[in-house]
Amino acid sequence: NQKVVLITGCSSGIGLALAVRFANDEKKRFMVYATMRNLSKSKALVEAAGRSLGRTLEIKQLDVCDENSIKACVDSLPERRVDILISNAGLGLIGPIECQSIEQMKVVMDTNFFGFVRLLKEILPDMKRRKRGHIVVISSVMGIQGMLFNDIYSASKFAVEGFCESLVVQSMRFKINITLIEPGPVITEFEHKVYGEGLKTDLSKADKDTADMFTNIYLKNYREIFESVGQTAEDIAEHTLMIVTMDNPPFRHQTNMLYTPMTTLKYADPSGDLSIDEFYKMVFEHDKVFHASLNFLKLLRWRSRKSFSLEKSK
Ligand code: NAD
Image 1 (cartoon, protein in one colour):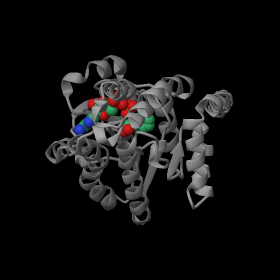
Image 2 (tube, rainbow, N blue to C red):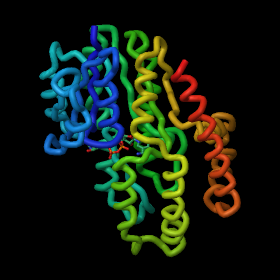
Image 3 (cartoon, rainbow, N blue to C red):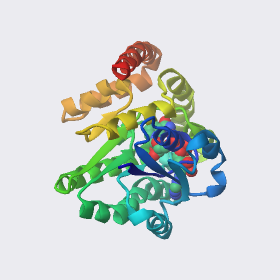
Image 4 (cartoon, rainbow, N blue to C red):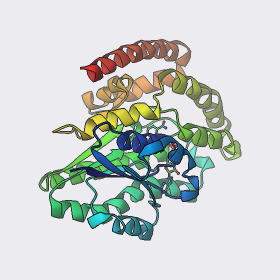
């Protein structure tokens, strides 16, 4: 009674780590279909998969922006069965919106939001018929809390979260679980892709104040944030494995406890002012507050690592 796991976006980062972690499960509880848009990018996964390839792991083509490719992939699975769907494929976009085209923004929405909806349209009806299944989405803390210069990316993750919140009540009637995994920063290709592109942003369309804010505040600080509080893709895979093996998996799971105080502020104050004021201070009084917060976060990180490893060793 191996569970069939289908994961999207497995050529790099979190998707690759998820595929490898699930396929190498000591108890062989999973048969993993690791999918990617472009099979010519499978080298890293093939190397990392090792002996699991052809046993508990198979690589398949799937482009979340192409309905035919999703259908062909699902049709190729034995009985079209997917017990656990992990929607991971995603793109980031940073910068002032004055410098981004609607076309660029649509690609982000089409991948992060409609990509997930397309997957569900193909897979959800079968899960309903079988009255079982777990839909896991790699969302983000930016799916709960907006972030400076991540307007479109954050909107795409909010869209996914609103969609899931709406669907979950119906899906419970069919014994289908839904879980949103919400990481903070994770050190993957994503960071290099997004910030690599971000550094090339044509700021000529933005006014001087906005351009300065992006270059001298946002871009200057992001590296320090990634380096000091960023998790690894393997950390996220470990959290996801823990979630899918639970009897009653939660609807939301944040992987980085350092962000919980921020998101809790949002839930604590319906006016939204509390969390927005905190963010404002972090960004614009960063010399004082930012470094104090960062040191505090580092301390918390050390403590949460300790308690996570304690939990795991139980
Ligand atoms: P990544 O860039 O390494 O991985 C994203 C993967 O999605 C890539 O392999 C890419 O090829 C794939 N992809 C893009 N468009 C696709 C399409 N149309 N069809 C199929 N695959 C496609 O970055 P990552 O950090 O591993 O990101 C994975 C997920 O985690 C994303 O949804 C991202 O939003 C989310 N996330 C990342 C971070 C972070 O800081 N890295 C934080 C929170 C959430």
